[in-house]
Image 1 (cartoon, rainbow, N blue to C red):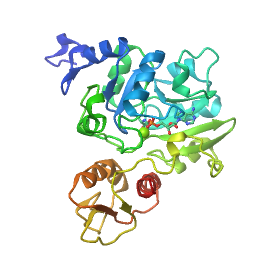
Image 2: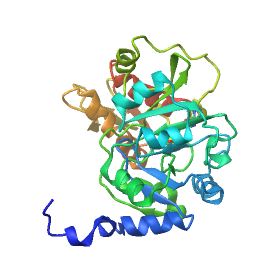
Image 3: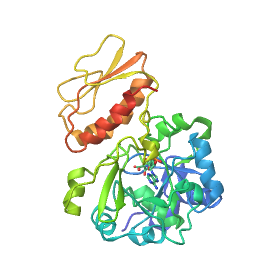
Image 4: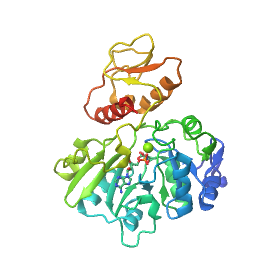
Length: 319
Ligand code: TXA
Ligand code: MG
């Protein structure tokens, strides 16, 4: 730890146009801060400040039945907000910090504003791994409610530019930490006593979870929306999307994968993690191109491919 900037201290470290200190000041005033995580950029506010949380819903144009994830530094902090049984503790110990959100019963004296959980008696908690988000959590000492930093229903942002263009004039102070490494939103797991259900597939795979729990996930009740972000048309570009397309038509921007070259390629080597990290940027570029439509090459369903295909099906479903 002998960097020449040590005397400045963490609060003065600059990410793009803003410092951590400025971001903390904004949060303490009840304002919003866009912050990189290892999955996608989040739009953060103090989760215990009802007015600040209302501001998140307003900036995103989000229907208020859709609850938010609260970001915490670690399991000790999470345990002040939610009730962690043995299984929840196991998941948190192995996979935090990281791209896993746990839905658990709210703690008895949970200080989080009611709008965060949209009236549910459960709360979604995640300890993120990204160093900038961790620095913000540490420096502010706050529990940060943060949905993805895009207009409701639009594609999640994986760069600071995506945040600025999606939120437009509602864009808050943005900490720019470069492109997100995972590029796809966290896996959401609901704890149900000794069982668990996967509410949203993500970077943490069903196989990883089953190995930790010693048993597979229980199937979710089909047709019932448990994570309202699971509305079918959600991660949607403005243009029509056609899936499983080995070739494209002249009016289509072609998102390639592996041997299917495409207008751009998610991963020429067929690496699914690399493909996931580039998916939302590809959809943003395709949406901004002069082509009227979007076609996407076939992507295999193994590992994180499951989450990739989940987002692609939503992108392609009728609006
Ligand atoms: O990777 C991520 O999870 C990113 C980064 C910023 O952390 N955040 C994110 O947040 O994707 P958002 O708001 O776009 O998605 C949160 C999802 C929604 O589908 C919501 O319905 C679900 O979490 N959720 C939140 N609280 C819940 C609860 N108590 N029960 C069930 N689902 C819940
Ligand atoms: Mg979202």
